[in-house]
Length: 66
Image (cartoon, rainbow, N blue to C red):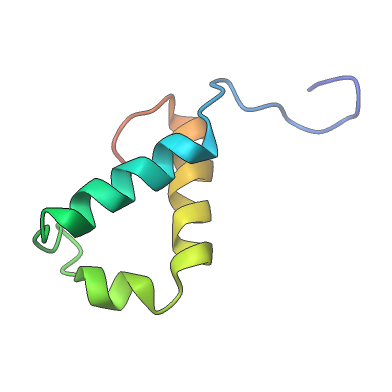
């Protein structure tokens, strides 16, 4: 735990990096992942979905998350 009492993320992954990755997938017309979610489905709650990816990636050390 950090000084504030909150659990600190082990890796500092900039949110902008997640945003850039999303833009590349969209530009590439990326196929659905293992969860079967299309880019269009992902975009229905874009802000929350990008946050989930950023948060999980930070905890997992940048490893792929599903």
